[in-house]
Image (cartoon, rainbow, N blue to C red; front, side):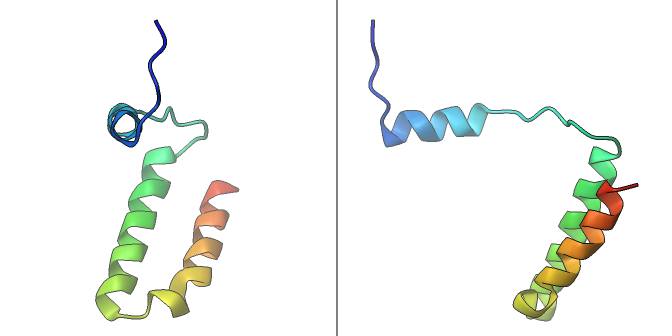
Length: 63
């Protein structure tokens, strides 16, 4: 039985998908990313801070 992939099926698959962390300190890095992005959004300058956020997270990932 072949089932066509529809937008609804795709959305359901993505809603139920999980990602297995593949690096150390995954939870810490995700928490930091959430915090930094949320703070930038609240301050209204996400565009200005985005590259800075990326650099900070890269440093965390290289530890």
